[in-house]
Image (cartoon, rainbow, N blue to C red; front, side):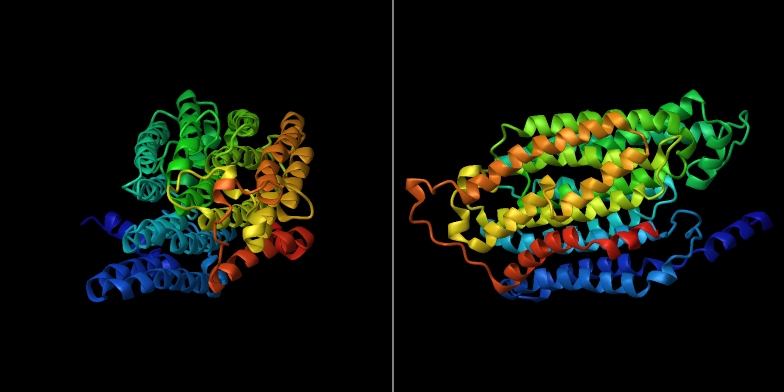
Length: 508
């Protein structure tokens, strides 16, 4: 082997620090442990142990992430430049672990009602969470695409997990088709960028055009090359599919309705957050010199998402479709924050912190709502209408209160956390002089109050239908009650006192 090649391999090997990936390796170990337990435990014991093992895996990974926080922030590319750990990536690792632990809680409530396989569900959940955490640390298109496709394939399986439900199977097929299209767009964009960056006839060309740092250096010299612009636009369009932004949102309502409730929650929270984590990595990294094209493109996505999501949700009574359509609107709000972070002349340096704060408030509000949905749903998981929530506060005052806090936070009602999240996005847009987006976003908040409070009105003010007057009260287990109360209190506390949390994010 030539000396140059050997030296190059040794240089790459010197950056392979496996301890930096300990949280992801822990999740992989627990995923394998679940498969091993299926061989040795009887069915009854396995049913009890499976969610506990998964939750233990998430807790162990979270504990390691927090313990090794400072040591992980090397600022140096790892594994030959594939991976870069930053304060932002550490925040998103914590986000994904918390979100997945709550999804595991929802699954413990929903899966027994449908007699669905449990080991497989939690195994895939652990693997997908590890891939999401790797996504947030991507510094190379190879790692980005492999991790993203691992998540996407996991969702292909999870969306169609209720094999006896035609809604779930239909949703799985639709997600497979649209997910494949988004992957094709993303890959086509990556290929164009790699090809143009490696062209030896262009100044600043590089042999490693998939590395974000190398691509950034090339685009600094060639910011207006047509193939580079098309490639960047296709990559952003591929990510727009993942976050459910207009005009790539057509799959959202049907998939959200047909997927099992825990999977819908996973899609709504973690998949959306992963898309925005990648967006921030790209537009603040290799695409930072392309703001003259990325800002108009993302602004169009944001405006259309705000308008379509809210207007389409106005007449919606199925709560899962409602969460899907409102999720499109939330993607619009988050895109406003991303645009404010990269505005060519008036970029707001703390706008990324506002986006992360909004993601956490969305996590709390959405998981509170999905937690109530998991307990209320009976029979067909896809059929959850406002009528099923009529008189909910009388059947279970706790569920009614949690629903009010969760949905109120999603609507942006003060003093809940969602209000502060939207306020920070508005202030960022104001400082970035994004007046049109700011105006549309304010109107969107007003419109959203109407359909969100239709859900609250059903739970608090509508009478139980005569055919359901003898329905037994809803009883929650101790763990479920503690979890839901914690989410409701989180929405209230983070709305009233968010100073330390915001300062922590702003310091990133």
